[in-house]
Amino acid sequence: AGSRATNEEGANGSCTTVVEAATSNRPLLTKVAADPRARLHELFVSGDKEGEEPSDWTNEPGRRRLLSPLQIHFSQAHIRPEFQDGRSVEETAAQVEHELLSPVCPAAEEQPEADETLIDLVNDCPSGSDGWLLLKPPFPEIEVIEWRIKLRSEDGAPLVDEFGSELYGEKEWYTLDNRRLYCLQRAAAALHPQQVRCAVLVIRQEDGSWREFRKFRTCDRGRTIRVGHREAPNLPRWSWRREVGLPEEELAAGVSLAKPTARRRSGPGSNRAGSLSPLAGKAVNGRHNNEQGSYWGSVANALFFVIVYMALRIVVFIFRRLLQKFGA
Image (cartoon, rainbow, N blue to C red; front, side):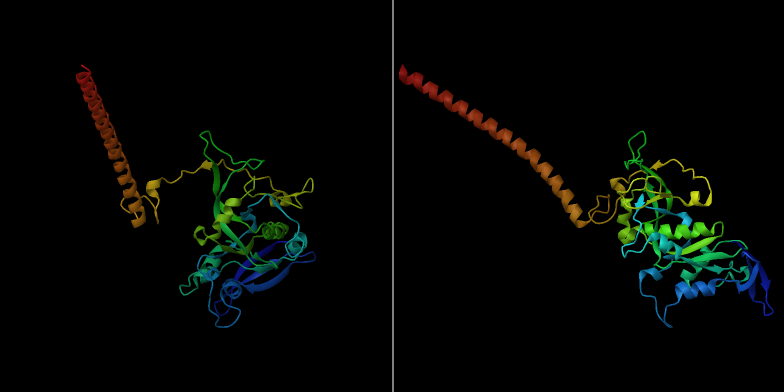
C-alpha cells in the first residue's frame, strides 16, 4: 500500500499534511503532523524522563542517523536462522512495525536553536511531498560504519590487481549486526516502493571497535546473505532487490589503495622527520652510534692483527739469527 501527501496551511499559519493511505476498501484520509521534528525529538532526542541529560556516546552529534535498510550492506556471507536468545529471524522480521510520518514542512526548515542530533535526523528524512515510514523494530538500533570493503572471490580469497595490490570497493554503509539488518531489509522490502527509514548508530574508526570490520567475509560486497545453519546444503540466499523484482546491481570495479609511507605516519614512536618522540630519537641515535662504533671497532681489530703479526715475524727473525750465530 502506498500513500499520497498534500500540504495544507491551517488557520493559525501552521503547516499540516493530509496523507491518503490506500487500503483494500477505500482511501483513508488521515491528518498527521506535517513536520516530523516533534516525533523524532520524542523518539530519539529527549530522554525517557523529563529533564534527563544525555550521558553516552550515542547522543553525540552525528552518531544517530536515519538510513534506509536497503542502503546498508551485510558484512558476512551467512547468518544463522535464529538470534542468540532463540528467537527466529523470520518471526522477528514479521514483528518490525512502522509509523507513518509526513515530509519535512518547508516553512519550518530553519530552526537555529534545534538540537544537532535532531538536525541530522531531519536532514536524513526523505525529500519530496510523499509521506514516509519509520521502522520500529523489536531490538536496539544496529551499528553501522562507512567502510571500503576488501573485495573477495567466491572462495573468500582477496582480489588483487595486476601488480598484486588488494582491491577495495567504494565507501558504503556496512554493519556487523547482520541478523538485525536482515529483519529490517525484509520489512523494508515488504513496504517497497514506499520510502522507509530506520534509526542507526554510527561508529567510527577511532572508536576502537572498528577493527572488527576487518573481519568482513562477504563475497558480493554485502548485497546478499545466506540464511540457515552452515552445515545445511543449498542455503537460501536473501537479496532485497530480487525480493522486490529489481535486477541485481552492477558493481563498479574495485580500486587499490595506496598505503601511507613511513614519512607520513604520526604518533608515538613514529620516524617522521622533525617530529621524533624522545624514545624514537634515542633509538635512532643509538642505531647511528652503534653503526659508527662497529666500523671503527673493525678497523681497530684489523690494525691489532697487523701489529701482532709483524711482532711475531720480528721475534721469529731474531730467534733464527741467534740460532745461526751460536750454531756456528
